[in-house]
Image (tube, rainbow, N blue to C red; front, side, top):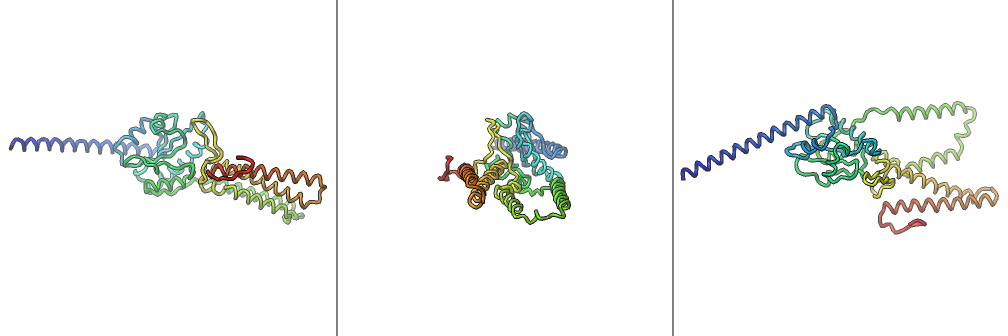
Length: 328
């Protein structure tokens, strides 16, 4: 009996010693990984990773820090214009976090380029870029750890809200000063002021109803086409499927849009408006009957054709919408 007790104590001590050694190794490895990540972050706000770095510092335990990774394809031969735009916004977000007074080792930002880490893309079954993923400090990524790029756009402010939802880290986005807007506005005002000065003795054009009507119409078309949504959300211009190379200019969801889509809608709305104007002029102008007939036919053609295209876009975005006109 006495021997069994000593054997049990001996086994228990060995187990405790091994457990302590394993914990010590774990803490040492974690300290080394954290030190390396902090060293990389001190040099670059966005840590560039390849397959080996990803497996060692993101995939393999232990890890007590979160990593937000942008999977991209920035090489010129990939022809991914959206990747470059998204990378600029991601850099703004990472710099805002790295140089803020609240910076900690709780969250790191990294990127994996397809040409430097194609094995990572294969490991994660990823076939599109750019894609943003959050790897939490504990457990595996969930569905909500994948950023909904097509819905929310890639503006740094939207990414910051998503990071706050996933990590509870609040990042105040600070953009470098951009003087292009004020300079363009100043130039426009200077041109308008110069034209007004040159025609200071004949300012009747300021009271021309057609000028004001055209200006108001342009403003309405710009606003109704979704330009303000683009300014707030910062969506990509279009989407190119890296697997097939097919470019989509119309987003397939009613909750999002591309910049190219707003341009298309603007042109279609302008064409429908032009058709209505021609119809009104054909009915009220004093031109001869032949020209009025031409204006009427042109107006009807513009309205029917471009309204049909607008309706087809609406059907493509709102799946199940039952009505169509000319085009199915």
